[in-house]
Image (cartoon, rainbow, N blue to C red; front, side, top):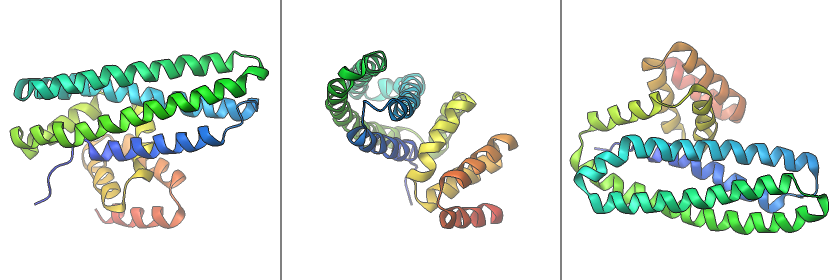
Length: 221
């Protein structure tokens, strides 16, 4: 029997987005105003999702872990504080880049790439902590039904616009089975307009072949 994954669906999406941002930062000409604007929007959108993800974990997951495994809860909190600090520093640097003379943008861009690499290393390690240490406690202490209720509680607390940004990362970051499971769940339990919006998003960002495969499964569900 497969174990219920609380973190993996969203973490796949975050890794997808974080990797894309790394590639775009590495390739970016920080002196190109249009490209910098596009990258800044991409960066701040991801930041909003990352902050949201941490807040909802603190609200819904941390109390459970603190109850059953306080030492892991403390580790989780320390990592949240550390990665939040690094991300906020990157946000400050991005604002500085956007308000600097073109002549300074290249050097500040180098600082951003190094800072992002440091953040990314810490954040990927944190995701591993959640998937191994935290999830181990949840599997031991909670039933599948309780884990599903936790998932619903988290997703229900996310504003619709931010949720669509999550899906923008999760849908292409997942395999066909995970896409079907996520969207079939929305089809059954979410408001119709939310499900339709997710499907429209999937159709717009997936390769045509992948969307056709997904649509066939959704129509049959």
